[in-house]
Each structure stands twice: as structure tokens, then as C-alpha cells.
Image (tube, protein in one colour):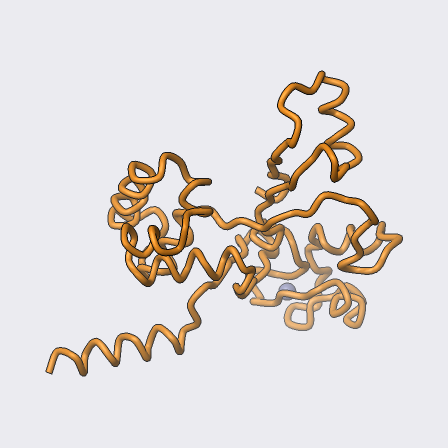
Length: 202
Ligand SMILES: [Zn+2]
């Protein structure tokens, strides 16, 4: 999942070499944008110990000298640590003239969060396929017009997709074999809404 990305090309008839160069150098004139999943969703993004419930960003690992504070054994080192070790530019640096990127979340995960169900559940599956039928494909759903989306998918799913598009999500990084999570609606928000629904029934 972490290595996944796709792209949109501005010029439709590029040769193989031109296509390679457009992607390699991320030239703005040829490459419109790249689409990526959040690397935090990967199973080994941060360092840590799953059994000890310890998840560390690289700087915390450094402070602890690479040792787990619970079991005192070496931590399982994740991808971000290696990225930091190899980095020659600060976090968030964007090379001049580089095509922009957009972070996506798989539609089933968005629906699961919005509906309070597992992404692999039957309810999510049904909603997923009805949206694919309405818009043509997953990418079109994620970039649909808000008004149309609200009409077809309902306010809550439309709001979830809007938040993903604007990058207003909480990222809980994966570590030591545990998948990371993208959280769209906070726990408090969910409880408030359930409370309102309960009140509405009386
Ligand atoms: Zn440990």
C-alpha cells in the first residue's frame, strides 16, 4: 500500500521515454498531479512493538536509543526512520516546478468510517457498489461534485469524502506489523451524533 501511487498525464500521446521522464522528473508541464495513499497506512511506518503497545516516531526512537521502554528490547524499525536517515531535505520540502500530489483514502475505508462499520462489511460493500454504479468508478466518486454526492450518498458520506479531499483527516501511523489508520470522524463527533439520534427518537 505504501508504494502505491498513480498519476494523471497532461499530454495524451507521449512516447514511452517521454512518459518515463514525466514521471521520473515530475515535470509540471507534462504531469498534472500524482495520487497517493497515505504512507502512514502501511504496516511498518513508525517504529515500535505491537505486543508492548509502543509506537514511536523516529525522534522518539532516538530519545529512547532504539530500545522499547516496556520490554527493554530493540524496537522494530519502520520505513519513516529510514526515510529520515536518508533525507537531505526537511520534511514537507517541495522541489521547484514539481507537479503536485493528492492524498487519497480507499473508498471502502471512507465508507467504513462514515457508516461506523468495518470496510469489509456487507453494508459498506452495498454502499460501495451503488456509488460505483452511480459515478462509474472509485476515482470519480472521490472527485464528484459535492451537491451530486450528497444527493446520491447522503450528507455523512459526502462530508467524509470532502474531508479526505481537503486532507482534514487524522493519521494514526502503522508500526510493527499493525496497519495504520486514517480517521475521518473523531470519536467525540460520533458519540454526539448518536446522542442526537437517540434524543430525536423521543
Ligand atoms: Zn517492547
